[in-house]
Amino acid sequence: QVQLVESGGGLVQAGGSLRLSCAASGGTFSSYPMGWFRQAPGKEREFVAAIKYSGVFTYYANSVKGRFTISRDNAKNTVYLQMNSLKPEDTAVYYCAAKSTWRSDNFHLQNEYSYWGQGTQVTVSS
Image 1: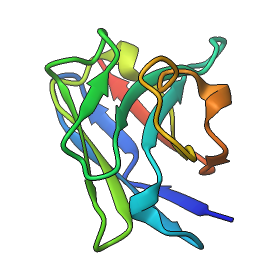
Image 2: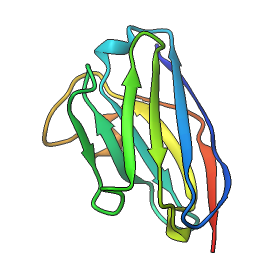
Image 3: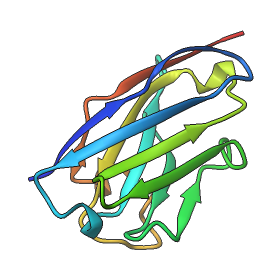
């Protein structure tokens, strides 16, 4: 059983940056592909970014490509989301998630992830 705890959310002005962290425990972290998702008020949860086991391969939603960077430190059991050039539309609760295996056709689907954190609020003011 994997436990995930996000941190690093907060209030930032448009154009600013934040780095989210997600600390994992209870499993072999390096064996889990990881993802970040977000849910804005009144909207469904959506895919943001995913990273494979070693961190070499990363994938992004078009809406964040070029602004956000996902990375992982397997020695620290932590996955990160560096968010730059933030926009008001990035305002959401951000969740990290872990899945058991990697498939190239479903890493963006939230129901493929078995473990979830509690979420951290990111608010971007205009």
